[in-house]
Amino acid sequence: MTEWLAQLRVLAGTAPVALVSVLASEGSAPRGAGTRMLVTADTLVGTIGGGQLEYRAVEQARAALLHPPGTWRVQDYPLGPLLGQCCGGRVRLLIEHVNSAALAWLADTGDESVLVTHLAAGGVERQIVPDAGVVPLPARGPLPGKGTRFAEVLGRYRRPIYLFGAGHVGQAIARHAAHLPLRLAWFDARPECAAIDGVTVIDADNLASCVADAPSDAAIVILTHDHGLDYTLARVALARSPLAYVGLIGSATKRARFLARLAGDGLSPQDCARLTCPIGLPGVPGKEPDVIAVATCAQLLGLGA
Image (tube, helix red, strand yellow):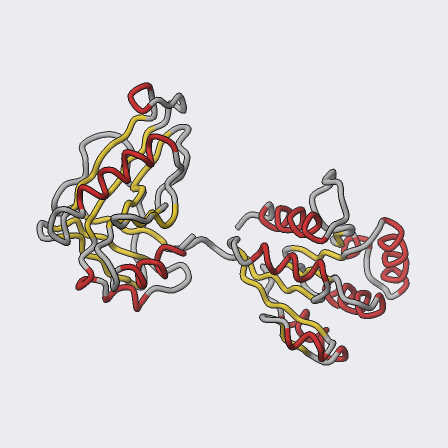
């Protein structure tokens, strides 16, 4: 995730700040390469996994703040007895005192940007480039030294989620999706839902066009206030070229009724089989909005990239 970018923009202009970056990990490590944590004299933003590893990293970061901006070091941490941990993994960290005068690259960041980092003698230099060969850094071997360059993709792929319905469950899904690698487009036909942040109100007769225009990697989640509208959206979603997911809130009875109508409208058994109803991971008990939302978000994350 890339929340650290926004936090870096804020903190770098207000106080000395150190940046802790996971360059590489191996085995049972708490966080992977690309994880960041910001450290000031009295605050922490983010986490590299907690425990003694994080405690030592914070200690090193605050020590770096006593040196000039641009100061950096790379440190290996075996996750064994010396850290009081039994994970058996290994983590390689870059710890730097951020030079606030060298952050022009932040203005060029976006979804899946490629960030090139240069460990220069005078500090860490970064730039955003259109494309680059991204080769993971090793967790073992000689520490990266002055002159080392490496590239990484900022941010993870975020699957487009087309969410139809802004009731209690829709709001819960939107609330949880905001913290996940999902890109939400949220629709409702009711004018009063325009007051809900993030909702686009579209006349019910035109909502189906949003389904038709969705990219093929999109997940369609249908939970409107109206069963007739639910059916129309599901039919359009299943009749078009395959989408990554077509989910409909409801019971097994609702699913059976919808499948019978869909077959009567000429949809093939293969098309009908792509309907997920009820939504959410099977076996998760509870019908509270947040329970349904968490189970559904987990199901969407399970679709992969």
